[in-house]
Structure formats: structure tokens, C-alpha cells
Image 1 (cartoon, rainbow, N blue to C red):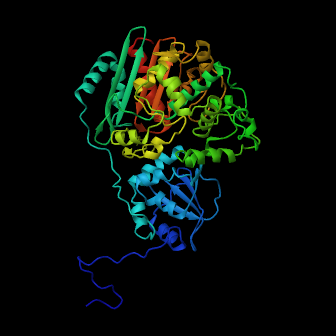
Image 2: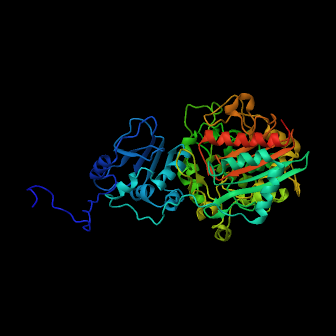
Image 3: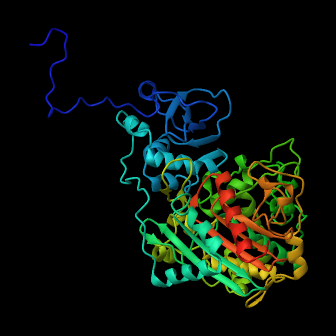
Length: 543
């Protein structure tokens, strides 16, 4: 017999006592979360995520701070006012906060497609937070789920990287030919496979030697090989086509890049908006920091809703434009798309297809997919995988859902093979002459790709800038080198959110377009891009 007060013996087959269930962020929930959290993440090393609930139920805190260790997955929650502004702040409903923490990966992405959610702060951290929530490396979410009454059930098993895939024979032959032509480049590319990216697509054209290389390596999504015909997302490399659209309308005397946006969009006026010019948008020198982009939480929401958000945005007072780099991921190019539509009469998507894609011969590129195209391609579309930071690569649904592929996101969600992106840059390097027609006059190309923004540097290595183009800034040091340590000062191009890069070096007759579907941290991404870029110059004896 057991002594009095001793717990009775439990047989091995007896089910453990069920945990009491508490509403997310209630006082009892927070107490249990603290008891199971273990060591609190260090404030200086943790991502500070702030959650504001628009509809907190009775007894539930309306404002929560979540300290997140992106390396270990540790989570720590605190209710009440913040002592300093978090890195990210999301304003959302109580049930949406439950989806953010416990929902499957696709549902989490869809929170950013209906337009209700408001996000303030640097959006880039969302990708790495998403990976942590999918993989739950510390088991914190599993422990929290045990006593969370409103945790959504998840059908997503948090898939990891799939086994290596076998490429079709034609792709293997293309890789072999590329390796013969560019051995250092392909070796550098292979060194990233399985380390910072599961796959890659590359196109290199060197007019003086007649060298043209196209190749694809690895997988574009679990179980699917990357091919030369795959349609990766271009991310911010898409912005260069919008810049050319502005250049075309400038040539035709239909707009002036130095004019206020309100001159072409009368509704974009008042509250400081009237001071924003096209030039500031193209050089990313407005007074609006990236963290205050009004479309952060609604980048794939319906167009009408995004337009209304821009109507209601305000410009921060006290910061003169041109004083610092304020990169505009979404709102800036949405406005540019609206200006093109107002001046020309065609939707931005149709304008780019007819005035840029067609004359360049970019037949496989889509500014936006139709629903039919999406459904036909969905199982083959390259996914972005989050890598780096010591955790396994994680395929994600960012910009791969139907809404984010079929709703236009100007300056971001163009999809097409790197060979098509190279055709665009080849046209620019050739003075604006595409395969099937001219897209710009030579002097307009020079105007767009000249160094307009000078003397400014940001933490991401961005420095000198043209009108919508990143321009080589290696003269400012290694941290500002854009494409290669061997690139000429006239080199211009763009990066695509730590995945893609494309550039043209007119002095060398060189065009390079590269997509790595592994998104890693800025420093690691820049290092791999410069290594690959340098290898191209070395292989072609341009050093």
C-alpha cells in the first residue's frame, strides 16, 4: 500500500491526465506559458514581435510582446505595454493570432492576403519567423498547444527538404555544357546547393566571345527538379521593368520623373503625400521608412483595398526626402503602376506585357498569372526555401499561393525563367534594342542607369542607385559591392530579396541572371552572389 498523500500508481496503459485548456493570451495561459518556457531569450539577441489584438475576448490581453530566439526557437510571452518598440508589430484579430502561432504554413501566409492585418516594422524578419513556427525546433509550440483552447488544428506536417531529385536528360546536358564553359561559376553554384539553397537557375551571356549559358540545378520544390523552363519569382528584380515603363512614358513626353505623384494621381494629395515625387520613388529616397510601408500586411490583398490604403497613408513629418535610403518594397511600385495606368490608360500588367515583354521576346514571362495558368503550374512553381541560421532549409508558401500569384503585386511577383530576365537586360545593354523591337532610346537607358543617388548607404549594402536600378558601388568598399569585384562602374541591375540577382555590364558585354530559391540572411546572400559573380568574370577572362 502506498503511504497517505502519495499519488496512486499509474499503469503504463493509463492515459495521462488531460491539461486544462485556456484561451490564447488569457492570464492563465500566460502563466502556463511562462512556466513551460524555460530560459528567457536574451533581449539583445531575440526578435521582438508585438501583437495587438483588435478583438480581445474577456480576460485576454490585448497587447502581447513575444521574444523569439530565431536560432533555438525559444518563445517568451509578456502582456502589457512595451518598454520599447518591437522589431515587428502586427495588428490582427484574436483568431488570426492563433493561426499565426499554431496554424499551418499556407494559412499563415494567407493572413497577409485579406487586407485586415496591419504590419509595422521590417517585413524581412517574417520569413525567418515563419520557418521557426513551422519547424518548432525547441518544441515550444508543441508545449503551448497542449493547454491552448483555441489552437487551430493543422494538417501541415511542416515538411522538410526532400531527397535529391533526378533532372531530365536535357537539363543534365545543359549543366554539363555550362560546366565546360564556366567551370569556376558552376563550382561556386554547386557549393551552395544543400547549404544555402536547394536549387538554382542561371543564365550568362557574353557577347564578345559568343558565350551563352543556361542551366538549372537541384530542386525547385520538394520532389520537383529545377529546369531551365521553371518560373521562379523575380522579387524586386521585377522593379526594373516598372522603371523602364516610366522611362518610355518620359521619352514620349507623357510624364516628368521629377514631378509629384499627385500630378498624375490627384487622389494622392494632402497629409504630405503631395511632396512625394516619381524620382524619390525610383531612387528610394522618400521620407517613408520601409517599416512604415502601408502595404506591409496587405501586399497580396485585393487591388481596390491596397489603393484605399494608399489614399489614407500619411508621410512622416520632420524627415526631408533624400536624407536616407528608405526602400519601398510594395507601396512605391504600386504607385508607379497607378501612374502608368493613369497616363497610358492600360493596366500596368498589360502595359509591361505589350511594351516590354513582347519587344524583348520574353515569351515565357508572366507579370501576373491567370487563375488557369496558376492551377496548371501550381505543382511545378519554384518555392522559396528559408535557409541559414543553423536550421534546416524550409519550403514555404510565401508568394506561391493562388492569391499572391494571380493578384498583381507591382515590382515583386513577376515570374519567368532567368533566360527571359537576361533578354531584358541584354536589350538595355544594347542601348534599349530588344529582339523584336526597341524598348528605349540609348540616352534614356543611360539616364535610368546613371548614378543618381550617391553618398547614401544602408545596413543592407545598398548604396548608389539609378532610376529604379541598383548600380555597381564597389568603389565604396566590399560591403557595398553589388554584383562583382570585377564589374565596371557602369554595371547596373537589381537584387531580388536575397534570392535573385540580375545585372548587365555594358563595358564587358556581359549579362547575368541568377535565381537561388534558398533565402538566407543578407550577409550570406551577398557573399554567395559576389562569389558567383566574380567566378563569371574569371571564367570569361574579364579580370
